[in-house]
Length: 147
Image (cartoon, rainbow, N blue to C red):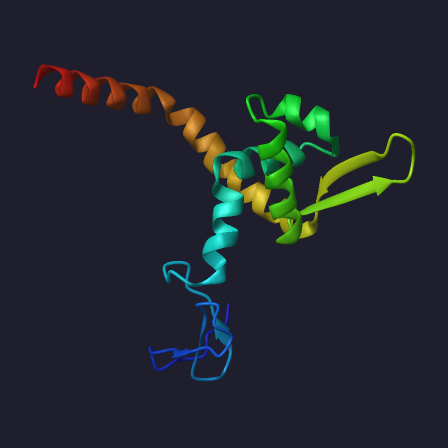
């Protein structure tokens, strides 16, 4: 991470993407800015199917239908759209072999592996804390039904 001081007020970028330039002319991305392109990429990796696809692909290379079985509940259309977005963002590599029928495999890029590692931390943390989550849900539901 760059430790150069900034004046605290990035200037709007000329790219129109919602990013800004800092005092040194470097692009600064701000996921909280409505037009920042980082927000869209964040949505791709943290959306319901993105996080599950990245998590599954961290286990190894998958063909489409095997990945669809691993990510239980995703429709063919949603998985295809998710993989396409993740491929465009540089997280997923799609390798198509010119056979009949075509053999298509999906794997993670180095950037995708890094993202998946971070997402796995969240997944493992959530799974470990589910007793607390379900207890909170039960309390909430009980309070709402009593009132």
